[in-house]
Length: 224
Image (tube, rainbow, N blue to C red; front, side):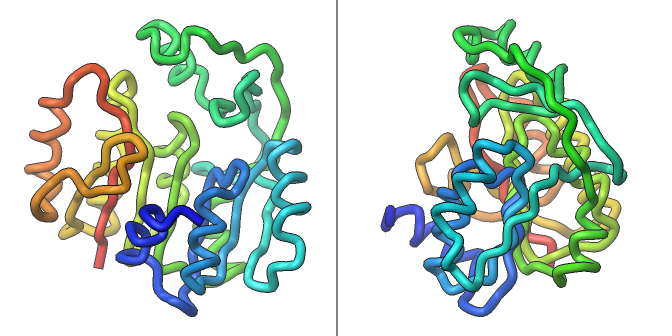
């Protein structure tokens, strides 16, 4: 277990709490949440990743796997499967933007797969209200948040400079359900908050507008 990663997430996750891991992939975050004592519901529609999670965590009583994507509405959607499973996405716009920038130009998305989609609201109704929702879905973050109609304590979303338009949409959606929310972010996998303090949505928009072209990481939103 990565101690730095565990210490970082301990500020968001308490023992006995419920966490949603949206875009769980191979479970590197789910494993941290479980180590911190949280009940963890992981959402992962890629069969390869979902099978891996089942094999690795099948004996963990606090872990539940949902083989679905999350979005704005329920139904089915087309997922673009990459030769790097961490880059598979439901957003062709994100794929195009990151290929054109050169960030992921060495990768391909040669397969498509229909996946089942549910919403955060429906997931909450079924599994309970989480205290923390981690969202890492390669450019589909705003669609996931569009399916949430009430706040939770903490939310994290992935961002890349090339697709900040989606990040701004995420902030707009958060403002509708948690007008006083505060924001932080971390660069890449540094496992460190980049700002000295949590800031308002207005201030965070200013920070986003001054990002350099190589910026990518995760944004943390404190809604409570």
